[in-house]
Structures are given as structure tokens and as C-alpha cells.
Image (cartoon, rainbow, N blue to C red; front, top):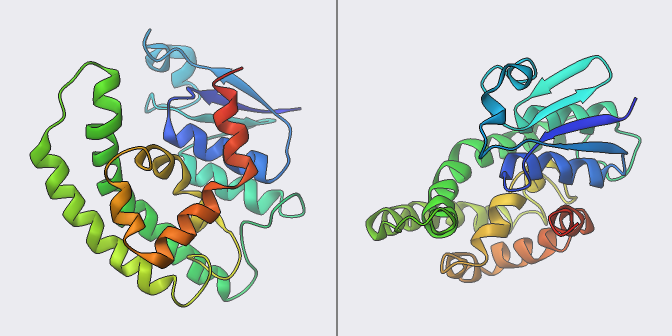
Length: 212
């Protein structure tokens, strides 16, 4: 059976899963969920994700939700396909640390900036300059730590592209079109890392899905 990803192409977590599937060169079916119509809160969807959030994922009789858990499943179960995305032995511990950093240090701040600078305008809402200023300062501190880390290895987890890097891609893609880009550009190692990972063909394929 072909894997299924249920969600919206406007969702960062959905894109995160799709990038992982393309990295692994796996076949899948994308099942659109009409979030404007509240389809993600309907009973049939809640059977897949009881929290009523996208994505939901199916691989045969296995059902999963939470994008980072799904990408880990894809990377470990299909480790012999496509790009590795995970490491063996001790290096995986470091990859896991930076996956946690993305989830708990980078994403909360970056997502607030994404909401203010990208998503609000899509919904006809006004950007809160004070929130932007506050979170730019917080993101700058996180990126200082990234700059130090990327002075030690090419990618966050190790010297090869892993889930620790991949998990950043959807939010990075949105922020690079905003004034926040200056925070990344001001840090040479971070800037080179962003340029590198955003050039992944997997991301281009996911972005192209919106135009199909």
C-alpha cells in the first residue's frame, strides 16, 4: 500500500513530512485537507489525528501524527532508501540533540515571526511590530549558538544532512522572504548552511506541489 499524507500545502509540518518522503525517494499519496472548511475538525479526520491538526500519516495499518515523529519513522524504517537522514551509533545522539533544539529553541521563536510577517498578511491581519522586534532579538541569540555549532561541523548534527537540518526547512523557506533574512545573512556559517539546505531538490519538489 502507498503511504498517505493528509494535510494542507500551506502547513509547515505537512511540508516537513513531504520533504522527508522526497529525500527518501518514496512513493506516497497526498490527501488534501480543506482547513478553511474545518475538515481537520471533522470526525473522519479526528480518527487519524485526535488533536485535529495536520499532518496525519498512514503507512498500511500504521497511523501517525506529529510531523517530527513521522519524519523519524520514515528515516529509520526506510533507512536503506534515498538520503540517510539519521546516523548510526554515537553521532545519532548529537543529531537528536539538535532535533530537540529545532523543536524547542528555534521553532517557537521562528514560528511567531512567520505568523507576524508571512501568515497574518494572508489573512488580512496587521503585523505587530513589537512582537516582531521581541522575537527577532530572541532568534538572534539562537542563531549565535547555531553559528558556533556550524563552525564545528558542516551541518547541525554532523557532517552530513540529517533530520536536524531538514526540520528547519519549511519555516526557513518562509522567513527568507522577510526582513528576518538579515539575521541569517549576518552569520557566515549560518548563511552558508541555509543556502545549502534550501537548495535540496526535495524542498523544490514540495514547493512545486502547490503549483500543480
